[in-house]
Length: 48
Image 1 (cartoon, rainbow, N blue to C red):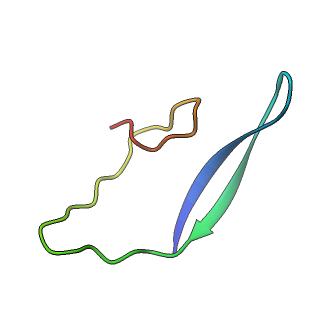
Image 2 (image 1 turned 90 degrees about the vertical axis):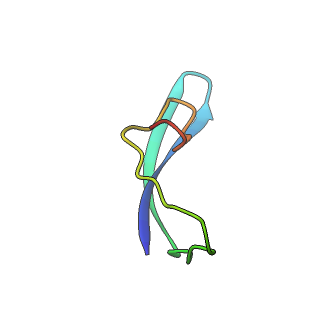
């Protein structure tokens, strides 16, 4: 399992985070896994 942080916008001006465990997905041939350095305010883990 991988532990990720989700950013939740539950109301106007209210931002919270929650930790969620998601299944660790196996890589396909020629794929690589990258580790994010930080998460953007949008909750994306694509920032490296």
